[in-house]
Amino acid sequence: MNPKARTIAIYSLALSTVLAACGDSTPKDAPTTQKLSIVTTTGMITDPVTKIAGDHASVTGIIGTGIDPHLYKPTRTDITKLMGADIVLYSGLLLEGRMTDAFVRIAGSGITVRAVTEAIDESSLLAPPEFEGHHDPHLWMDPIAWSLAVDVMAQTLIDEDPTNASIYRANADSYKSEIADLHAYAERALATVPESQRILVTAHDAFNYFGQRYNYQVVGIQGISTESEAGVRDIERLVDLLVDNRVKAVFIETTVSERNINALIAGAKARDHEVIIGGSLFSDAMGQEGTHEGTYIGMIDHNITTIVRALGGEAPQRGMHGLLAEPKSKTQP
Image 1 (cartoon, helix red, strand yellow):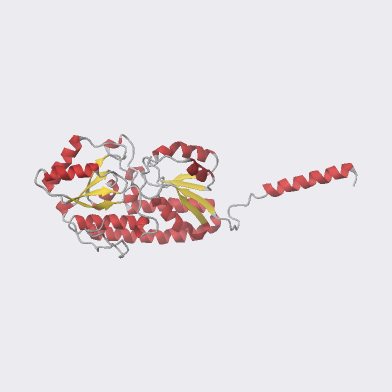
Image 2: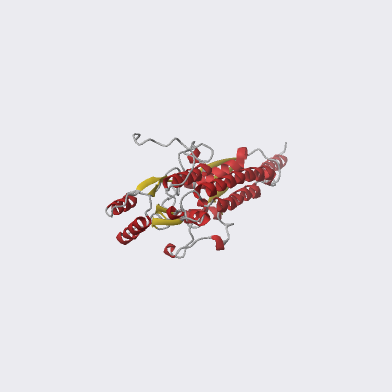
């Protein structure tokens, strides 16, 4: 082969190699066996997305059990996971406030980044004065509102992978049916608590949507974010509430210090009113992975059951379908 022919052959081979590499721009609706890579923030997103995606995606959550998303800062490992994803799903409404810059940078690189609360009509969002003009981000406490977030999760997967749209829709519909059953259980059980006792006192303001949905007065010692601190006047005001209404129980949270709750109990006791800790509620994070409480449905099931039984209502000891962990006896650690 003469030098000129050899040069042409080399260039032709190089060109065909480049075109083959570039030819991977397969239409999104073309069949593919490659799984989507999805990275989520909280477990309340990770769990539904895993069920919606089924075998068609690898789902990784970066904020684990017992970790407060209000205070969470992404690590280098987290950033690597986020940058390697096809889809990033986060809650929004500033829940993951310290991750905002990371989301902006990742979206700028062309990765699909979406807040699952984006479909919630603003008129349905709560914005108490103490939240300083921001909306309350704890929408998952209202199962009906979280069903709308599930729709966003499913639609995001469909947009990215239309080939499997029917599977994602079917899985999302099935999951939303479970949420509807959860809501029905909540309505039945919470209605058994005497009206005078429908006052939910917790460590911080994570249960406002829950209270709005089920007609409970909700009082958080701290504000929307666990970064805020309760003052002496706040404690005194809440002690008055407990004593005046003869509230039986207050609740701790798995991601918030018990210090202020213990101060409330001591203040009520000093005024001859006995208040107990009604149990530990899941607020900004779910239970241990691999347990019923480590799922979104189980998290809310646990909260409903714990609240009802502590405030004088009637609910099965092990929840809606008997899947909650056996309560520890007083002699257990």
